[in-house]
Image 1 (cartoon, rainbow, N blue to C red):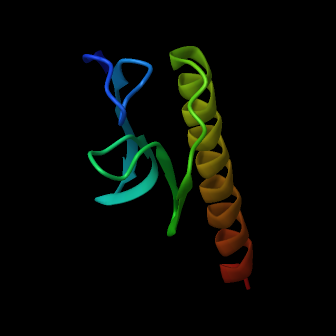
Image 2 (image 1 turned 45 degrees about the horizontal axis):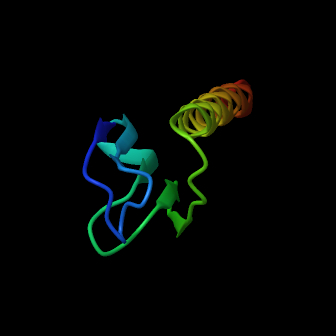
Length: 85
């Protein structure tokens, strides 16, 4: 996250790119890339994101990361149960 001049594209004066990558795959991402505006990536989904503040952005990002970690842990546990004879 960094400060930039306020523009029509970034009226709040911030540019940001937050990403959580697992094994080379983006699982979660929040950014406001040029011409795309504020948006969120969650697994294969890409959707608009309503920027409120840097604090809320960080909160949303870390919440998604924790959910991904939980899902991965549950999947791993489930797979290990399925492999037992």
